[in-house]
Length: 252
Image (cartoon, rainbow, N blue to C red; front, side, top):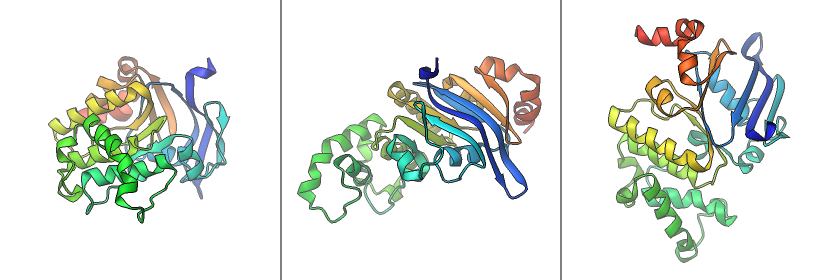
C-alpha cells in the first residue's frame, strides 16, 4: 500500500547541461526501514540525496513525502517536515564542547533557532535532553570534551547525535562509516540500527558488510539509473550488479 512508503520518487531526473546525472529514478522507501543506496563512484547517489533535500532542483520527476508532493519545496521547508541529512544539518562546532554542540542543535525544539544570545539559565531546560542524546549514542563520557579533540569516529557519532536532536522522521546518511576503522564501523553500524527503531533511514554506503548487516532494502544505481533493487541476498547475486559494483569491490 502507498501508506507503507514514507518517501517516493517518480521519474526523478537531473541534468547538468548535457550531462544527465540521474535519469528516471523510481525510489520507494518503506516506513521504519533502513534503505541503502549503493553503486560505483559517479552512479548518481549524492545527486539523488541533493535532490531529496532540495539542494538541486529536479529537471523532471516528482518527490513525494508521506504522500504529499514536495518537489518544489525549498530546503528549509523539507527539513521542517522531518527529512534531515546528517552532514548538512548537523555541523559540528569544533571549539564548543560535545555537550554544547548537542544543545545548539536542540534549540530548534524550543522554537529558538540558534539564539546564541540567550542566557545560560534559559537554556538549562535543554540539559537533560542533551545528556539523554549523548547517552543514546555512547558519548556521555565525552560531554565536556571539545568537539575538535574527538577522534574521527566519535566526531561522526556526534554529528548523528546533533541530527537526532532535530527529531527527524527520515534520516539521510551519506557514507556514515567512511574513513573509519573496524571498531568505529561496528559502533556506527549498531547506532544506525538502534536509531532506526523509531524513524526511517536512507543511507549511501560503500561498506558492503554494513549494507548486508543492517539494510532492509537496497537500491543499486549505475550511471544515474536504477540497476537493481531488493534484499541484499537477491541484489548481491544479480550478475549485472556484481559486474557493475560488487565485482569491482572484490578485485580492489
